[in-house]
Image (cartoon, rainbow, N blue to C red; front, top):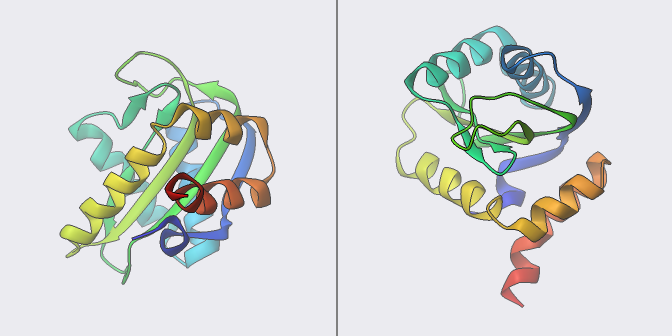
Length: 154
């Protein structure tokens, strides 16, 4: 599995600010609706339900909210770069500005876990995160995310 399999260019957005974690999850759901045709209402409900199990802010300004969506057929993702970080109840108590939402079919087991591992592993790379923050353009963000694996392998 690769980022190019998870993410469409139109599923990336740069947002100047979000007033709260809840507002950010709504923005992420709206992005998933526009890019993949998912119900924004069902998506935000699934993301918020997942957050009740434990926050998905993984530290270093990164959050990986994820949810299973009944109507979905393949694992997909959406990415938001916030120009002004927002509190996300992250494990390190730092606000987040890099948010990768991952959406999986209700029955996706291994594929969901593989995708989550890929995103988590990739966004742990400090150099990649610095490039994402320095390039607030959706096209550049898509290029950085989808080419990172091949550059790292070289």
